[in-house]
Image (cartoon, rainbow over the protein chains, first blue to last red):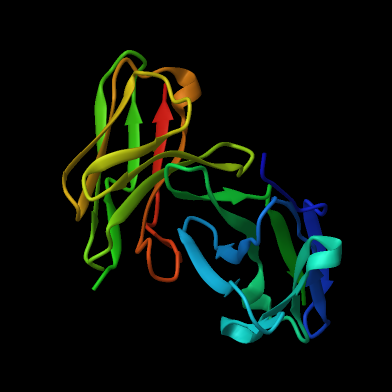
Length: 115
Length: 113
């Protein structure tokens, strides 16, 4: 069965520092991979997605992610974090269970930003 | 102009009651979903509908009954509410043959007391 693991439940970084959020997936076929962000009391907003092609994908708000098939990873990065980036981040894989497509989410990583 | 909208945003109710959550999308998507986010923020799919037809039903109790009157609407009715049903419920939509990107509503926080 497909699964997504985000090893870090909480991460705290200083404003202006670089950020990397880890994501590992388990899926037999070529995955469609996503990163979503959830601000407190809000819904999920798509940051970026990978379907095929260039393994380094650019997203909104200055985020990027790199797909590494050999490591089954899709880590999210940002070179300089802003206080407004504090939120919950979810990695997800789109899977098709022969009936339809659905997102399988990781457990989320809560990002806190220190001034 | 909200793409995926859910009502209500907050719902507090007593055990045993029956309640509904409504969802509408104006993106012209063919597929709609309900996801449940528990108190630990874990997100899991409950149902998906494609063109008003139930496609995915992920071992959800029979007390939960989705209904899709048309492809722009997917409502969730819950009978005999239990304390464990307290969660945030998210509606989402996507265009299956397009980018598979799911657009989410703002969520409905259900609290059963």
